[in-house]
Length: 232
Ligand code: GLP
Image (spheres, rainbow, N blue to C red):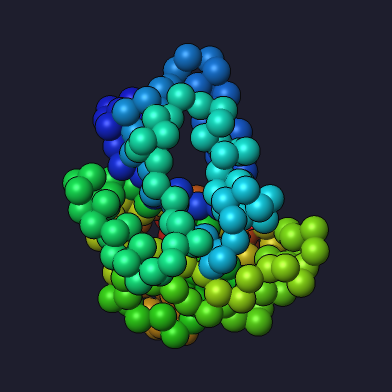
């Protein structure tokens, strides 16, 4: 996409899953095959109340894994400011910045073990916009391991909404490892329901799913063959 449209507006995820994608993009940048100088980025989410300098913050992750290693223009990088005094205004401004940028060309997503996309936890409205949310106990347990002091992990976050994500012109869902197999199968084969937020993506006209073998195991039919194309 970036070779065809260097001015693309991207939505970027965090977590373990996209690490190899960022490594690849950094490598391509170093090889001179890709530039991000005209690319606009919006991150999906951020813990509430965590300084961007905190090593547990998604801002720190993004700088370390990607922004500081490529030629992205800092003026085109958008991260939710979770220290904002007025969180609602911050979320409204984020939505406005996406509009001003011309909308999202490609949203890249991971999936939580409970089916969350960004920090849209089960029960999130499919029309939801960028907002502050409470994290579920499962998400806290899963993500706490990434904090040197687990007790410091915030219980709230700011997240792009499901409605916001669904307006992206293209969506790429990434899933890796056996821990994601069950939820990926529910999201792609089960009912489309707010109980599994990622299931909403099946209503998107241009969804591509990239899953490794371990994550895709639940998508195979009883004969052990993939029952249908994962990517659409
Ligand atoms: C966090 C992020 C999600 C991400 C999920 C999965 O909760 N808010 O956007 O998809 O983690 O993370 P991992 O790739 O580490 O399994």
